[in-house]
Length: 292
Image (tube, rainbow, N blue to C red; front, side, top):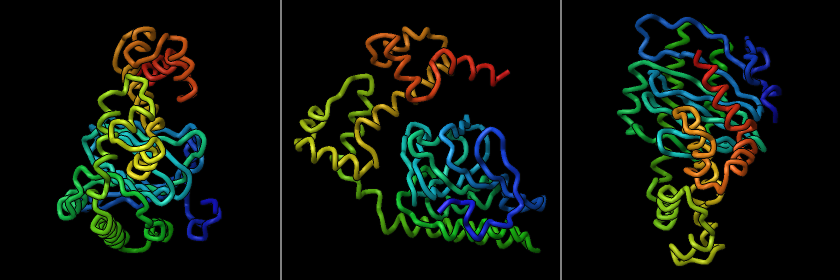
């Protein structure tokens, strides 16, 4: 069902951001001494161009639930592919980037939060450094919290804090029911190998030999543990690192192509444009103009 058809937000006061298909909630001003502050909240609609990049300097928690579609998330040196039913909680002072999958753009509901209560909740529930919760189905809780924004009744912030606490406690319950140690040793070894050899052209056969499984078994193991194929994981890592080099270095495209394991700059440029919708040179130019 499309977000626009959801009963809970039909009458919500909104404004539309022009850059992406995104709906923002109208929010009350928080009390000056509020332990939890809602900085921004809204819905992200299906938009293949949607992308958010933060450098990790902001004191902000980003709490999001994916309703449909798929996206890509980089948090520090970690990479995830959130899909429908997933939650992620991005914590302050770590650079991150997340964006829609071009072939299946996501819809999601999100809250940008700050304040000592969020620090305390992450401490109490041991969530520091844990950001991604696969199939943690909390759509009702997120929509109920959004409904508070529509009503904006008296004592909104007290009730809002209770709703956020409930979401965090349910995330903790999900973690206890789905321990991270359930990732297979083979899946962990495969990911570590890809992380260490991302410049290389790695075949499925080579990965299968690494863990002494058949190619089909290897593919199933990686897909189950990391929610994507080894090929998709490797391609996304390369795309992310290519953007980082373009943003933070002056290396010519020809040199970057070699550093990233491509046979020549023309193949790299075509590949980069296919992944990001823009050529490497144009991406660098646009990024630097955005800093002016």
